[in-house]
Amino acid sequence: MLKKPKLQASCGGQPFTIVIFGATGNLACNKLLPALFQLDCVGKLPDETRVMGFGRREWRDEDWRAVVAADLHEKGKVDDEGRLAGFLQRLHFHNGDLNDEASFLALRQRLDGEPGCQGGLVFYFAVTPEVYAPICAHLATAGLTDETQGCRRVVVEKPFGHDIESAHILDSVLHRHFTERQIFRIDHYLGKGTVQNIMVLRFANLLLEPLWNRNYIDHVQISHSETAGIGRRGGYYDGAGALRDMIQSHLLQMLALIAMEPPPSLDPEAVRDEKVKVLRSIRPISPRSVHAHAFRAQYARGTRNGQTLPGYLDEEGIPPNSTTETYSALKLYIDNWRWRGVPFYLRTGKAMTESRSQVSIRFRHPPQQLFRETPIEQVAPNWLLIGIQPNENLRIEMQIKTEGLEMRTRTTQLDASYTREGMVKLDAYGALLLDVLLGDQTLFLRYDEVEWAWRVVDPILKTWSIERDFIYTYPAGSWGPDVATRLFDSDDHFWRNEL
Image (spheres, rainbow, N blue to C red):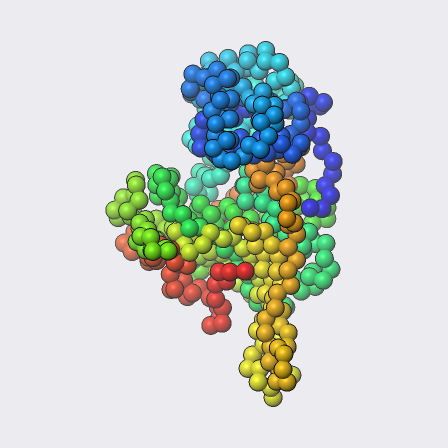
């Protein structure tokens, strides 16, 4: 990544304590604690950093440490028992109720009295947005939002509301007690190495910048597919759907990074200003044009490798008449000088053939006049392929002549992948948590980014909410419904499923 201004992982020389609300939940157990442990193992977690878990279980510090150690062992994260022992000493547990003011007063006393827990505080809301308001109010009552005692930062997870109105309400709740400078809206997708590398790819290579516009690029695809269905997330997912869950947040952020203008510096506000300009330039989708720009579907029973897969309506907690989409595709246009007329296709789906995230950029066809008297019927266009997961890589597809006397071509790939074997890759959450400690908001969402992303998808959501009689289906284990190709502007457009 390009060099950023140096930041201190402390608060006025004081260490940070990370307070995790929802410390016994899935997010903390599966993502946050493994990420913090990895940071510790690679020497990136400042020595004085402490972690205070907040939960309703009547645990002592030793109880939580034993549970965390068992979880890390079960996940295969422990290579060095000494490292693990050192990490566990950072962990403390506070028994409390999120709706009980006295629990927060006791937390304040605990932090004041616990050796090494004074100084800056990071509050991580690993809980549902419904309890943000009482948490913020109780923190304020307990004096834990007072920055005269040290830095105060708050980290919140998506979803940032379920539409633009609820996003406004959620934002007002946070801003009653915290400033925008203190709020870190985390999108773990932006912590992936390849996503960050997009900035370097675009702005550190003069080779690409002259081609990065409507004169040379035919269209852009941003795709995220998962082999898993919804599992046990039926209660949440049926009220969200693929458009809210993936496109409104992750994929629109990817679009902004791909399409943004060069910022004047790597200052967080400069970068985020350019991303907002992109989101504001997306052509609004009117209610009458929703079906020309958006498509939804739901996975039905299917097979993968001879194994029968359940349909969405077979999953636990799903109503039998649900029309919630598990597959969503959009066609968007960015009406500015650089991108006018270039379609951006965004697609996400569950229970698909493979789990894969990638950006596929197709360039325009070259002029054909030169090869009109050769066996070449049509020269294939160039592609720039950016793999995000499971493999982080970068490839360019080019045409070369085949062996022999005839004038024929074949496609070859130039591999510019930046990962090396044996290279330590920080978990996405680990990289972002480190940025929180550093106070670097570059890869976190500012509220106007959230607002404009909701403006893009809100007309679609409102139209779909009143169309409850029918939804297309696709077999679980497939690449989605063929009818989704109706969004394409040209007959020679097709989904790039592979690198």
